[in-house]
Length: 481
Image 1 (cartoon, one colour):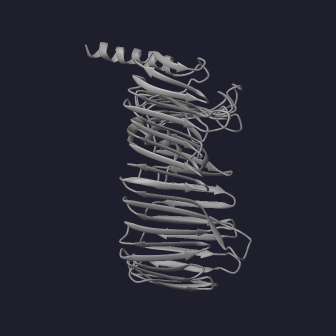
Image 2 (tube, helix red, strand yellow):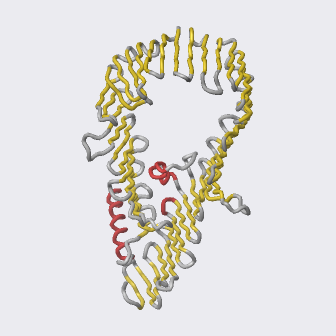
Image 3 (cartoon, one colour):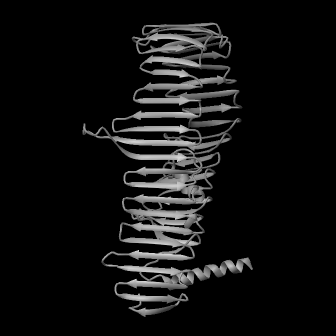
């Protein structure tokens, strides 16, 4: 019986839409059941069952399809440029031109050119299986930890292994290293790098004209010699008692390392006493940490502060074109403000973007002339496109977007919907009770209202007046549209 009532409701909606809408337009509004409308950005959207099913087309003919939260797909410039998510974060895939890539749980794949069967590609089922072809056209395959070869992974050009960690060879930038029972034994003899290690008993690492490092019974004794011009010298640590660094541009003393450290240098002075609770730096970096109560760090156009770590954070970035400020009270509050720099000395900065969230109650965002408020908002940090596509519409019960004199607002996925375009055009619906529409533009001059989607209604277009009764009966003068 319930299924018959549901099917009957859908048929009733379709019949009423056909009777109510003019053939000039395919737009309709049946609240959270089904609606097709044009939003404030000119995007035409079709939604069925609230946000569950959606199809949208932008003025540039980009398209978006979603069955939330199971599937979504964005196409730009046709099917050769798309991004798709399946039950995100479970799986995703994308294509840009001839390149495709994707992920499903811990399975990753990528092909550089799907039109070329010999192009670069990889398939990784972490951490078990690896297969691919590198940029030089060389194929590889591995089953971890049994054996095989892996290229272009973990910052290494090549890796080969047998019964890892028993045997492992690595190569990076032409430098080859052999490991036996990694990390116990390792040897490298390719210039400019030399390495010999029997961990934790003894190890030595040397790079020509740069440094030489050694350890004995790690971490008890470690030492290093540096040959950099202007920063040469020697350093050692007798753990956990004492450490010393003497360079041309730096002098460091450590007691019970890493707890107590005093450094003085040409570019940076450091005091840790004891680390990590008290950290002080002066010079290129200005830092004062009284961890976990308070901290402040300034360096190279960036300033970071915290209080009651890790709960309260503030960050400022000064770029040549903009200033970005972020503040957080994890996870309850997030704020981001971007201000563009201008050349006029009378106006130092102007605000271009604001985003604030009070989790989980709601969020506010403004970019230029556009502003948006919605509630609730269950994503506690900065908005990211993949969450906006797959999850945010599901938990958003109220949304309001404004751009200059245009306005869109919606409650309970369309139970209430209001749209305004300037002072001349507006639309309001409280589904299924009441609906009214006004268009005062000179070429349109229309007004319409109805109760229960056309049980009783009134329409005016120019000098034509018409009364609507019982959905199909229309009384009045004027041509049929």
